[in-house]
Amino acid sequence: MLCVHPVELIMLTTTVSSRLRSVCRLQRIQGHMMSSQVEPGVLLEKVGSAGVITINRPKVLNALNLPMIRQIYPQLKKWENDNETDIVIVRGAGGKAFCAGGDIRAVTEAGKVGDPLAEDFFREEYILNNAIGTCRKPYIALIEGITMGGGVGLSVHGRFRVATEKTLFAMPETAIGLFPDVGGGHFLPRLRGKLGLFLALTGFRLKGRDVQRAGVATHFVESKKIPELEKELVEMKSPSAADVSRVLDSYQSQHCENMNLCLSFPPFRLFSSSSVEGIVQNLKADGSEFANKQAETLSRMSPTSLKITYKQLKAGATMSLQDVLVMEYRLSQACMRGCDFYEGVRAVLVDKDQNPKWKPSTLEEVSEQAVEQCFSSLGDKDLTF
Image (cartoon, rainbow, N blue to C red; front, top):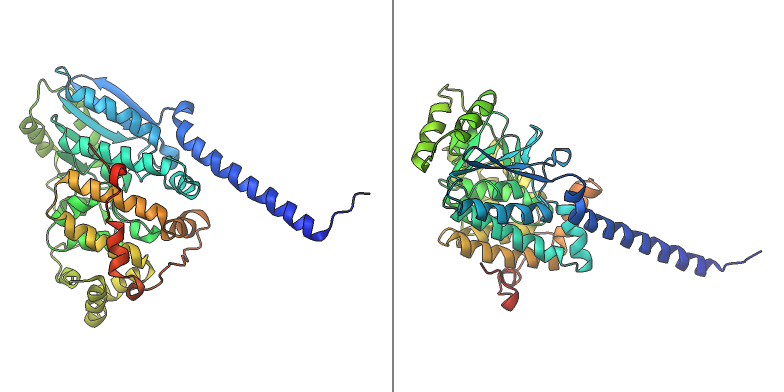
């Protein structure tokens, strides 16, 4: 009979457990890289005079991964330079989501072990975001269903964004120790008043018609009319941006509904402050139901993420999209080096206990120096276009 000392047994068990975790982590990263080989994660078709991009991972709410980015980018550039392609349409498969975000769990696993995916994903995603923002052809995003994170990057920088009553828009990154990236620092501060800062810090969800009222979508069309709209768009002959705009205007529902969210609502002024701490003080001093709810929401977010996000939007308000994306790439890599991102993903997406242990745990403990360092140049690793 083989005898094993208890200490040796513990060490053996620990080693096996560690190796199993490493294998599982590698499998997740490889799955991220190879998923498109099993079933196309994105469909790229030429229909009439339109290039049509269909995000095709409905089982995971069309989450965006690196192989999909690497398919979309070259095809978008090809269509942009093709005289026989007049417009580009992007949509999501399955009806539940346009794109609910990036494949964050795979990026998390990569970041833990220093896998290049943690750099490559953000770098190539942001390059695609910029290509959408600079596309010379009319780019039309049909943002039906959940549109968050990476899905926002695939849509909001394009010329036209069409929401339906099924659209649910949010940038909830501060809840997982990240920040509203994919150019969030460019489009959010350009929304009216302090709405963009409110959405960025709290992760508040806009629904249906409010997505257009906020300025995130350019048009609102009833879901049942989308197939007919798509058909008319692809059948257009040599359309200009003005032609596309007229078609979208003709489909836009004029039916007036009671607003679920009044976007000029006075409490948004509470987000006017020179610091996140000041915003929290404003909310607590106001004492309204709205203010108390937002203060409670902010108390659950990563303090570091809140301060990074505040500075990101303040700086991004006067920067070009390219410069914002360079800044955000620096921030993404700072988050990969930190601990809140991994803890946030664990609490929200993995263990789902919704109880992250942030470090530091309070706004007051997050120094200006620590925040400033997140914005520092990466030298020859900076994002370039």
